[in-house]
Length: 491
Ligand code: SAM
Ligand code: SF4
Image (cartoon, rainbow, N blue to C red):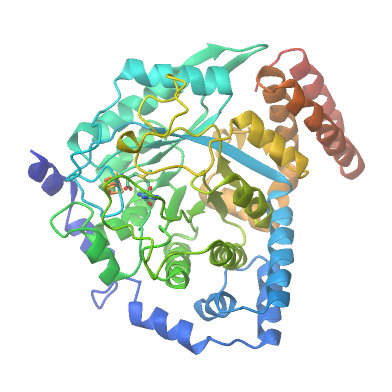
């Protein structure tokens, strides 16, 4: 049954139609290695020119990204940090968006060497959530914690095929629960699932998924083959690489790409992410909506994870990778997850992160069970930061950042190219401020602890003052909505 399913999922004709004329894909390992070598010791003046280009919000060229990746001088790294913060502020203002991952299944036909859900691991609990269990998870996530966005995660298996994905997405959107003053509901369902065919992706577009996320894991062909056995669905590099092209063709224009840092040289992976971005920009006029850069975490029975790996990415290297990415694709959303510990997350978020998860639980059914224990045989890997959403909102507020719970942009059709244009122009920063303030108010009133509200109130006041100063017409509208929200009206 599994083999039949894999044969049915992969469509060779949907790989070949995207390959370049010489039959190659757009990631050429030797070219990337050579670009990195040629820019191994960049001149400081060249680096400063590249920083200036980033600040004008242009996507960088491969040689420019390679140069940034090779910067080791602490003074220049400091300049890159300042530029990354300035870009983030210009494009996304002082907002951060939060979400929660929701694992739907632990069944998988693949054998990725770094993952505890790999098919050959007998020491893992295998399960697919039933619809009533999904609803219970949403009750906790939307009704008690206050999440508005999810990344819903599916194993690659016939039991979690496209019809299961569509059914569960519909169930999530349909669930609504009373809160202190209003109601809680998930308004944006992003998914992380197998690479699918154009027909299957069209089905998912019809049920209204948000971002479609597939990580290439490693862009390095040889490493890819080593960690993803050939006789599996994931063993097909090109089928995975072109998942985003198929999504674009199916009309899903918000796509999320990513690499799993620690499988191969981190600099190569950043170059791969840049090449992928440039490929999508060239072909479809719009790059990825988000880029993810998870680091390899410990996982139960995962032979591909070795502490002694030459590709282990240190915290310092991780920060350099984040800086190079922020400067290379200035307008793209960047996701930092709870794989990283609290201290590192708090330090890295100001460098250009736009989305982060909170109250994270990755065991199946763990939200409803209020299960805070991390159990290796029930999770894909072990988390570094299990702080609650309330704690994360508070930590962000302490750094002067506002957590936006707004999902209106998507509902007004501001997706894909339209939102990218708004982001590049810097208008998005101001346009969304209003909704950010109002949804922050909503969340604080419905879910925030007293302590968090105390720290957040001065931030809201300052935000409102800023709108009054910069845009008196908008201020009038803001105050009217703000007062209604305080009385219990909801987005
Ligand atoms: N089955 C889907 C897949 O592999 O694309 C979704 C599962 S999972 C949430 C999504 C990502 O988790 C994977 O793409 C991989 O990058 C990441 N992941 C897998 N094992 C990991 C580990 N040991 N540490 C950190 N991240 C891991
Ligand atoms: Fe399956 Fe994803 Fe784990 Fe690979 S990483 S074994 S595809 S769940």
